[in-house]
Length: 219
Image (tube, rainbow, N blue to C red; front, side, top):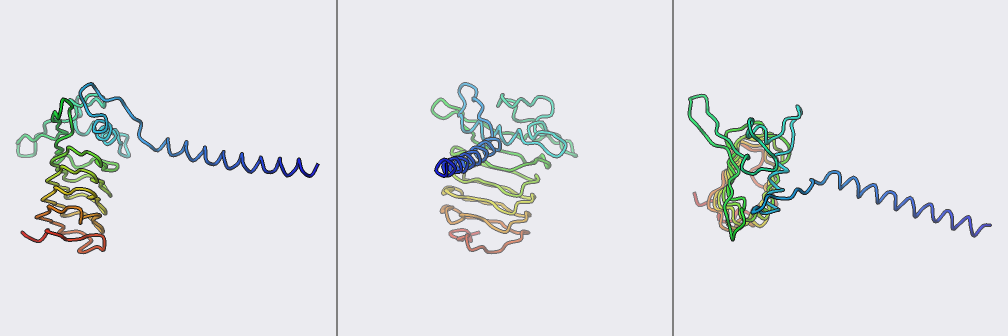
C-alpha cells in the first residue's frame, strides 16, 4: 500500500528526530553538574557553585578540594573547605572559602586561593551575588566567569593562564588585578561602573572591542 509506506517512512523520520533530541538532552544532562542539597543554613546556589569547583579533578584524578585541604576535605561539609599552609619561610597562610550569615542564611562572602598554585578545571563563580572579595594566585585556568557577582568590590586573579574573564553585572567592583595571565579579552568591563583601578600588565591584550575602559585610569 503506497499510503502505508509513506506513513511508515514518516514515522521513522519522526522517531529518528526524537531519538536525536533525546540523545542531545541526555548528553547535556551528563555534562551539567549534579545538584547536591546544601547543609541546613547554607545558600543552595552558593554551596553548589563552590562544591562543583572543588570536585573538579586534574589529570591525576586529584580533586581541587583535596589540594585545598589534603587532610580533611569533605565535599558536603563547607567547614572543611579551607586550610592553613606554611610557606618556605615558615609563615602561615590560610586558603579558604569564607561564609557570612545574611538574613539567617550562610552566603559565600570571600574567596582566597593565593597559596595553592595547581588548581584545575574551570573557574566559574558566576551568580555568587553576596561575594565581596576574590583573590586567586596561580592555577591552570583558561577562563573565569564572575558574571553577576554584583557585590564584589575587589578582584585579584593573577599569575594564571587566563585567556578570557567575564565581569557581566559587576557594577560594584573598584579594583581589578589581572596581571601576568594570557588574556586576549576582558568581557563586559563596561559593566564595572565603579572601577577605579585596573592592572592588565603582562597579558596578550591591550585593548579589546568588548572592553569599555570607563573610570579605570585614575591610578
